[in-house]
Image (cartoon, rainbow, N blue to C red):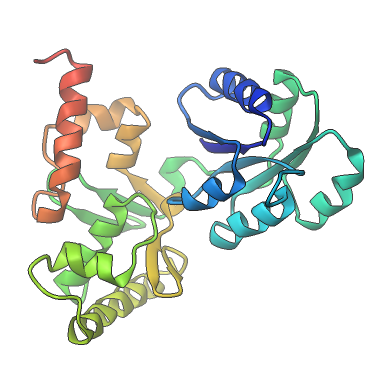
Length: 269
């Protein structure tokens, strides 16, 4: 799971880090003492957020609203030493409420009963092949894109692992030699609309996330070999042969990362 924790007390953050490392050893965890830094780092969907209710500058309730405003399926779990905050937590439809001091057993219990759970990857409606050439399937059928640039746009959003991308970012990576002027932005809006319509017709309306002028992909709907490889899935690891989105130049950085990761894990110098 991708879990974040925020508490202005460093001792609590250290305790969370140690306990969650034992509970979820294969997950990705980030911890903060500054709530504003949490917002700066919201670059992809969060599975669980452990938030202290009382923090200087921004309280946990406000921070929770900002997180769920961007990622509605994030499980919010409040941490506090005072039970009187529980009504506010219930109004937020939080997944849990943990009183300090807490134990590893309590964290395990609240994670087990979290509100939103990621389904088994094999049950996800959109299957994506990133290793080799990039291809997409919905319920076993190949997705037919009206424009090849729309397909490339989806590939870039998947490569970004759910991070929201502005129009300037999309143009800079899909048209690196072109200025991000109004004519190019108009062209990109055609591709984003075509991509959204393609998956609306396929019955996966929530795949493309639009927030203001930025776009992202809902990674919780994807069965993606690249993502499974990063999660150390044995089958995905066996399918990686050194090729990744071979038809797209923007993927060079990820290709280099995967190659380095492969060499390191296999002790190849």
